[in-house]
Image (spheres, protein in one colour):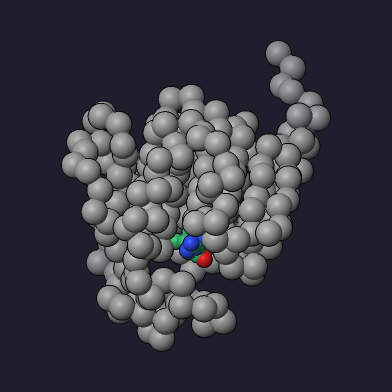
Length: 218
Ligand SMILES: C[S@@+](CC[C@H](N)C(=O)[O-])C[C@H]1O[C@@H](n2cnc3c(N)ncnc32)[C@H](O)[C@@H]1O
C-alpha cells in the first residue's frame, strides 16, 4: 500500500475494500463511484466516445452495491454522484449539475445527479464545463470540474474532513484544498493515483501562493 500526505490530503493507492477498515469515520463521504457506463471500453455504452483507451475497463460495470454501502458508513453525511445508477434510500435531497447550453442536445448527458443522505431541498448548479475550459487537459475519463465538487462540499454546511473512496484524478481533493478542508482519497489505479497526487500538490502550492499575494489596499 502506498500512502502520500500532501498538505491537508492523505492519499491511499489501493482498493478501498482493503483500506477503509484501517480508517476512522469522517464528516462526509463525497464520491463518484464507477457508474458502469463503459467510460473506457470501446466506444462505450450509450454512444459515449472512448476517452481513455489505455486504462483497464474499470467502468465496465457499476460498483458493487455492498461495497458502496460499506463506503457510505464512513461518513456522517454522504453525497454520491451518479445517484440514479445505484440502489440508494429514497431522498428529497439531490444535487443536480446542469451542464448548460454547451451540452444541450449533444450526445452526452445534459446533467448529472448526486444523491444526498440528509433531508433538504434539491439544488441545481448550472455550470458549463466547456465554457469553464475544465476539459482542457482532462486526465481522467470521468473527471469532474473542480467548481462542481466545491459546490457539493459547500452543501455539507461545514464538513471538515471529507473522504472519497473512488478518488480517480482527485477532483474532490483539489476542491477540499481550495476550501481549506481535510481530505482522504483512495484510488486503486496507479495511473490515476499519480495524477491525483500531482493535481492536489499543485492545488496546495497555489493555495500557499495566494496566502502571500498582496491584498487590496483600501
Ligand atoms: C468515476 S471515477 C472517479 C472520477 C473522479 N471523480 C474524478 O474527478 O477524477 C471512479 C474511480 O474509482 C476507481 N475505483 C474503482 N473501484 C475502486 C476500488 N474498489 N477502490 C478504489 N478505487 C476504485 C476507478 O479506478 C476510477 O478511477
